[in-house]
Image 1 (cartoon, one colour):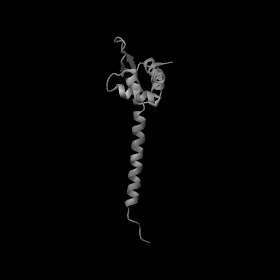
Image 2 (tube, helix red, strand yellow):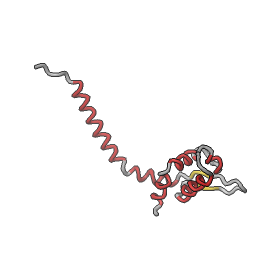
Image 3 (tube, rainbow, N blue to C red):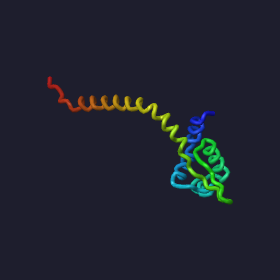
Image 4 (cartoon, rainbow, N blue to C red):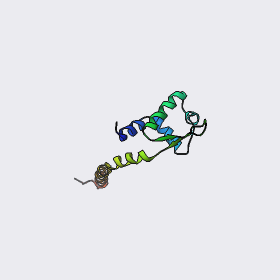
Amino acid sequence: MDRLSEVFGALADPTRRAILARLAEGEATVNQLAEPFPVSLQAISKHLKVLERAGLITRGKEAQWRPCRLDAAPLRDVAGWVATYERFWEERYDRLGDYLQRLQKEATRPEEQP
């Protein structure tokens, strides 16, 4: 599987996105990451493996403490891919803006008297 597909696959799950959001604040242990979720430590570990395989996190090795850290570099690839569609969205928003202005002008025109 290509790297971008792995990253999108990892980001597809809301629990994994929440884990990344937490790691954006700083490193954390598996137990700390699991606290807000009503799932087992085993389930969180599986999520972490997916994030690690996608290159979005790294795990340290400090004695028995294995902190997880965010590695945002793969998100740059996602941002680059999404940016290729930015021109498309801007054109759509411009057309929507023009349409809304036309509607507003039509709504504020005085009605013609018979």
